[in-house]
Length: 321
Image 1 (cartoon, helix red, strand yellow):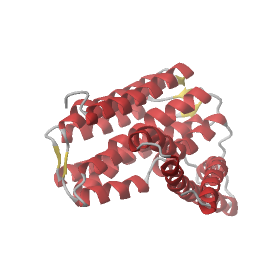
Image 2 (cartoon, helix red, strand yellow):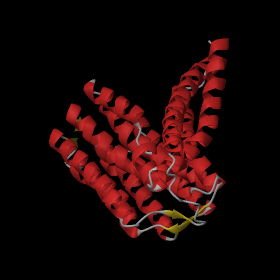
Image 3 (tube, helix red, strand yellow):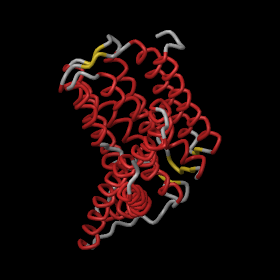
Image 4 (cartoon, helix red, strand yellow):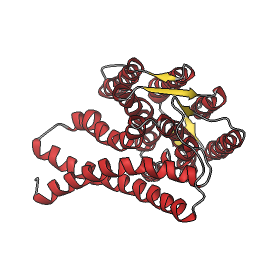
């Protein structure tokens, strides 16, 4: 039943996501300038990291529900790199001055490493250790590249002089942290209240799971990606994409497998994972051209729809597993 509290939660959650999405861009840029860092790298390491899905995935594997664990890896990654990034490109086409191949290769290798260790149909604890090591190496490599000036840069180079004022520097860090937490909290309120509203309206679980919940989850990812692109900072947007690929396929998957080995069903290896790999390759291809146009955004959104509808068809028995 929808109560006044449910409506307040929905409106409050939506307001928090919208307001702090803008502040997150300011916090990211301010933190990068204050410490002389790359806004792209700050976005990769901190904005792309998603502790919520890590918690959901570890809980799923601990309870022996492999589908939840794998959904927190592959499904969540597809929301970030296909649905949210695609919608962002549709609304705010992106131009880049620099998109080094050495950086793009990192996300491709991340998803290929995950696919490689999952080929035997199981993510073992050893596999988890390998994935976590891969995450450390990937982050270290990106930082090493950053120190040598290899970076993703927007089409119109923004002012990037380091801000040496300690007070403004730490104020930016505080704004960054508060904004990130507020977006997560606002998204949780939005999803929880929406579930209640949808149940009251009598919408089916299937429709809710495949369409509504995916859209609601994408709100948080859009809040991390779209405002930056709209404000001419697409490197922050793409940083979230690279960070999500690394976090989901390496860090989260590694921790989840360490908690308890995860069986990987044939439909994941034969359908879900190949689409995820194709998506990462396509995003890298778009970035090599230093532009992500509306047409590219449409292709990414279409891929996500194929992922969702095809998954439903397999789960429902319309397509042989």
